[in-house]
Length: 151
Image 1 (cartoon, helix red, strand yellow):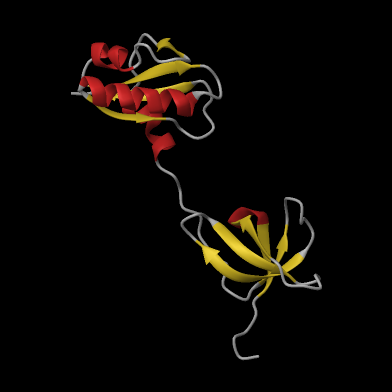
Image 2: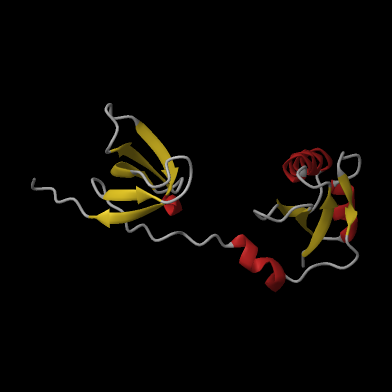
């Protein structure tokens, strides 16, 4: 039965540590099943390993890795960090939207394309003289009105 261990790292170096740890696991053939860094959690990554010894060997010689916390973590404690809730996309092509954050805040634009995987949309500003496509996150716009296809 595997357990999840918390590896303390230098803040903002989690991705580098994660890459080094994954390389160590591959080189040494350790019984480590997953290594992950939850978005927004600074200074820690999680290592799912068969034994604490395997988890410790996974970060030996890795810069910015400070060590494991003493006790393993229950799966229930990290489960909510693993599931990324998909945003319900209620925006369609040709909708008129208002940008509510970022450098174009307050501008009105028409949706030209929706990238659901990236959670981004491509817009054309309505008040600009030349239509320039801009890309913004889905959560930085609100729909003002639906544009009908039969204009």
